Length: 111
Length: 113
Image (tube, rainbow over all chains, first blue to last red; front, side, top):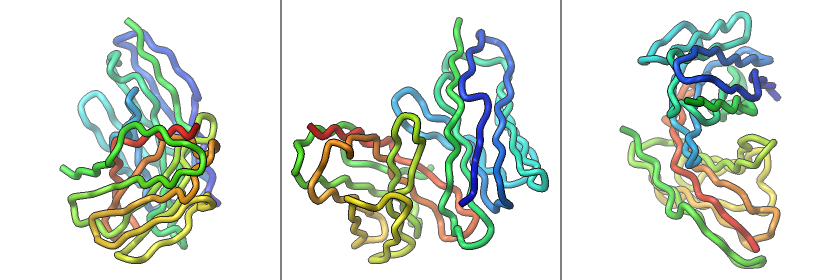
């Protein structure tokens, strides 16, 4: 099946810092989403971004489908950004829209 | 906004008990999913359903069954709970397209003693 790798696995930032999270995937995809899992366990949709660039406030994401990676940018980080960030993809053939998840990036933002 | 509601945030059950985890979505989505999440293993798909009364096995279906009698409701059933089923269970739904965006419920943390 498709492989999804995220880096870094762990990240500690000072409040106000910027960061880039990366997601590499092993096959062509028709669906790519970024999620934030808050400390209570809920997965919150950040972006649906199989290709191109999107921005939402301090967050933005870029997917380069031909090179099989996606980047999530967090600017001016806040303590509320802490949690785990997941990238998930589904493949073009045979996968329907069953997403395969990466193992996540654990982010901690400190004062 | 899409809302996916899971019936219980926290459950504690004993080995051998039958456990029902309920999930309801309010966006008329065709597809519904059950995942479990464990430290170091990430999210793994247990079962999914793309229509009423339809179900398909995911990556780890052993020890689980599901029921989808109505479009908005997808139930996960542990016929005889075991300690290795202690986990966080996450329900999700999406519309019926290959590019359907997935929306999750708040999760149900199950402990089997």
